[in-house]
Length: 356
Image (cartoon, rainbow, N blue to C red; front, top):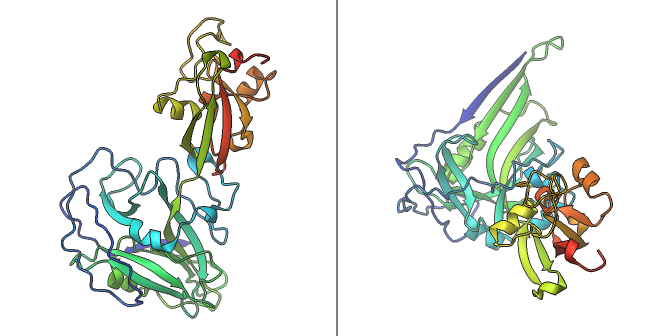
């Protein structure tokens, strides 16, 4: 038998669908700060507002192998994601909060966000930490002072020798929730579990502490709790050099892409057309493109550097390009696969290159 219920602090949302505020200057203090947030500006709803993480990324979970990371189109990371962490000094100036209206992707609520959402993204991570003796975290309030308890509270320090030291949690993270599962059985014959969840996202210091201390005492010295945090990271970038057929006398062009972007779509949004006007369609032999269905092969590009940064080739694409191992269909290719970053060089319209 498994009993599950949720414990969360009530937040009185302001009667607007979007809001944002800048955090106060970072002050080293493990106790509550008295910054005033009553002058938070109310921002009108915007069709361009984004969720907590960019569309390139799904929620990610790491730590003591709670479950594996996965980032939507970029897939499971093949690199240590901590290489994309940013300095604490910048984190302090990047955190903000927004009221997100209900959508098919998430419920309505107040969520942490980064100001520089084109350069950075917010990752959601989970870590297991032993409870006995405390978590070993020093918290500080960046913004607060509102009657409804809304604010931003960060981890200022992971205490050396504390339970969280080896967990993976770092300074600058913001705790958004705790999950505790305890065995409530009175007999070894039956296994009854009680799961308690505490939500702390976008709370000021005092409400955060109240939530963290609302859990029942540890049932054993080995008992662990799942700590869910949000962390700001920089988005992995790909520096892409485009080379055009010599007869076109076009200079090389270097652009910047983000990991997880579809190559054809990314280039089209930057005004770069890939479809070779002289190429016959692979599927019909006529002209024109298939609209990214991966059947005409008119958007193929030649890879001269950075093949390892691309998503694995699919079976259909592999069959069509079996005689051209350095070619890829841009419409079926994702850059920065595995959340990698680096440099790439491609040849546009490779059929027009001499000797190809």
